[in-house]
Length: 372
Image 1 (cartoon, rainbow, N blue to C red):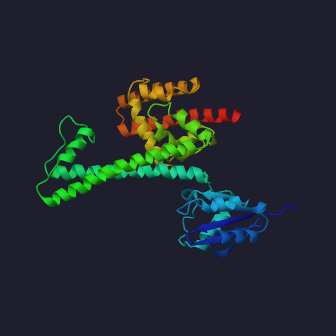
Image 2 (image 1 turned 180 degrees about the vertical axis):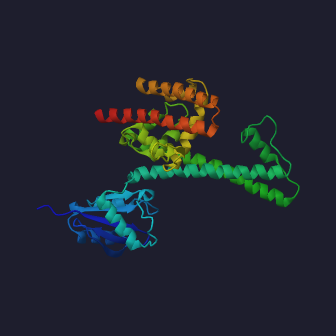
Image 3 (image 1 turned 90 degrees about the horizontal axis):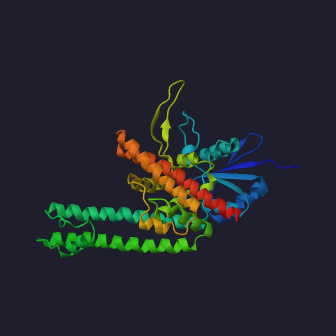
């Protein structure tokens, strides 16, 4: 006789885990709190019965996926739940760890929870490395702003004809000497931070190159194929892959667009339909690189030398998709701009459609890999 399924809700914190179980007969009960250690978790799962009958879940949060990896290694089915999509009662004003665990168990049993995609440890390590580079770029921008605004308050501006933060600009910064020693010490500290940021980004770029070389072959093929698109160089392609994972897990490109949070919000009732700004409920790192790539489609379609080099070893179908993207997205940009749409809206619309071409290339490469 098949044993009934037990749904386990886990409210996970750094040091403790509150546990609740929803039984098949409709009852929900709390099992108390256990330490957040591998030994305590393994002991709890042994007490709950056969592994095949247990369905565990917990909210995605700062504790990451360590518990998920541990449970799946033990042979226990586990889902990591999107916190913002957990149904909440409007009148519920009491929140405790016990109640949170019970609610997770109850909703997991009813099928009302939405699970997030969980990367493996190697994939998450590459994603953290890419996000570290993104943080370094933000720190570099802040450091540059400090230098520029500091000198501007002293009436100093970079030489005319020099590019911002180009070689001539950097040489000029080295030659700047201020009257007061306190100003000079401050300026040297700010300038050193700019130089440190450059070295930090270069170091992270090398680390990303090395990590991509060690990545699975399928991942490398998708990264190389995505670079056939205009505006999608190596760092952008790697960011897309590490933030989305397998593109073929989305059945249609519209699902990927929804995942990115770049679709319009909607509040419709009866015969009235109202659409507003984009939802922004998805991955912010993904949206950032897409909008940056969308800027390139304001130019007329063209295969420039750097893009031709990236496309050299790609199959004709991938090149055809990339060429179609240039015509489609450039036309979209021009049409929306001619209608007087604000540039942020134009770029968002172009970035959203760019996701469709990214999906087409990624799915083609992944399916070809499976067929081989």
